[in-house]
Length: 66
Image (tube, rainbow, N blue to C red; front, side, top):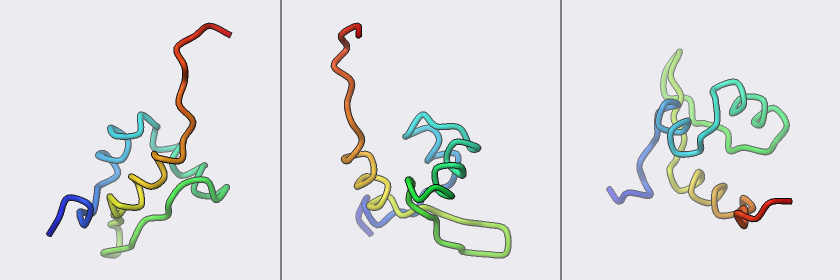
């Protein structure tokens, strides 16, 4: 299994993206964030490859004041 094949827990997704749980689910409802894979009755995981793709599309700040 490669690193991109990993399935990430919500806590890992929050840490990687810097988003809160409520922000992740709000963005998912709006179609702006990858949806997870249901792996059990109360468990979901996000494919790392899909999260990497999402992050690659995010705009990057320049660090300059507006």
